Image (tube, rainbow, N blue to C red; front, side, top):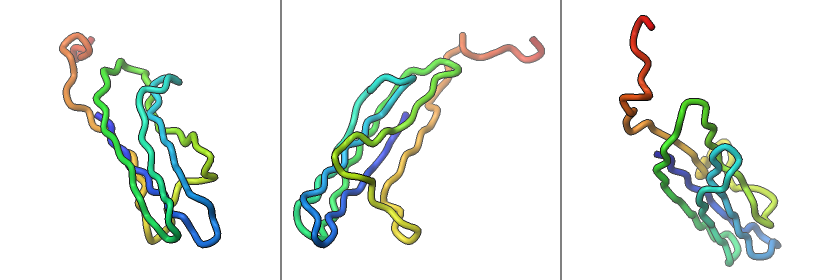
Length: 99
């Protein structure tokens, strides 16, 4: 299971600020989320959660794909995140001990 959240913050003098983030599995776009900030100093957050069946060696990451130049966050305000957790492992995926 993977969860992620992104924050869009329109700073003074900027146009509307949209941040699109997609969840990638081995180079394929699985699903995404968006955060849109229309008003100055407006913070908006988008989030999503996905459950994926993986096999050993699979790679999962998030990728930024919007017209906004970056995703908001700094040392004091870490409002963008990505996390994953193994929910269970199939019997056939478990190596016997001592093999």
